[in-house]
Length: 448
Image (tube, rainbow, N blue to C red; front, top):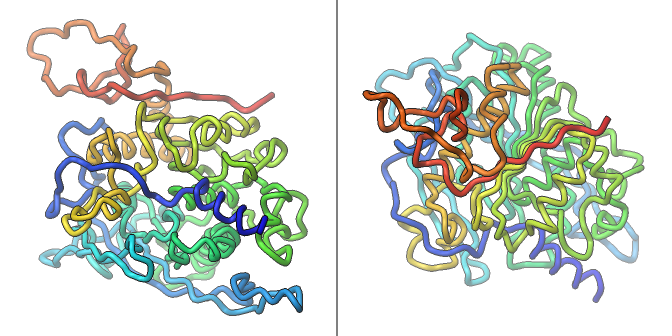
């Protein structure tokens, strides 16, 4: 009974991308990777065309903990097929039509799925732009989610010179608490395996990846359960207590002091982005103080301070504060909730509240959230992964955006001009005059 109760708690705490409220309109024909006019300076698409392809990887001898045999005290080992979507800088594709992404998510009625589609800018299997190599970003979706629901981030980063690889984690339905142990184990394993495999292919002269991926520059980005996964793979060491939720000690082997903990290490890891990451709240938290102190990778946390699923304080703020040995930032949406990591809701997901709440926030317009996220993530990754020191100024801002001031500009200044963040102007750099409200950005340096 205790383990079942823990599973239910973890499902509530580790974020399912659910339970928000109605959003604001739809943009069925406009890709979410192309932000709107009120987006900050770094949000728009970059100079590259974008391609997308899907590849199949195979993880060998993975414990199937959902088939754990109590009598034997062991789980069967199975080879795990892992479908990975890869977005990349592409050569101009001429008249080729961009992709339409299709997917589905668990419906409110158990056993049923709700289908949806998004327009994209990427061209399926377009020739790669070989002027790289480019940094690799491994992107992990939310519980029971799908990579295409995060096309806003994948396409945008690819247009700016990143290769984004997103595994399909194939989680059990979110309304099946008995299945939770599987994703708890598999998230960090899938993420590390994807990074290791693509790095190895790039080094080995793979026909597609060898001149496309720079194996020495890697970042991780995850939403909700994916946030738990990327933080764990980036070095946050799981607590023995939380890892015991997975039977047979299979997750404990990767926890703090575990025999396989170093197997998750990713060479060349430069940064991690955790959007509404799970694991920081609840009676059994994923990481304790010593485990959070093990995270040394520069980190950007993004969260709404009214996130009732993964929690804010305790919750994401607790992780941010506890990662004392990492350079770290935390972007906060005031009055924002959990659903800030996915595209906006397509038309087919607006007929039922359950379906809508996968995507939309109760307060923040999703297009606005995406624009702000893209601006901040671009600044962060360009600084820490590409070494572009000019992006530091976009992160060196006053903590509360509402406190920013902008004296009357000289005549002829465009209404939509971006703040320089200097010369007595404290509106966040790159934001427009009246479009910088409701945010906080906190910065903590690693302990000395």
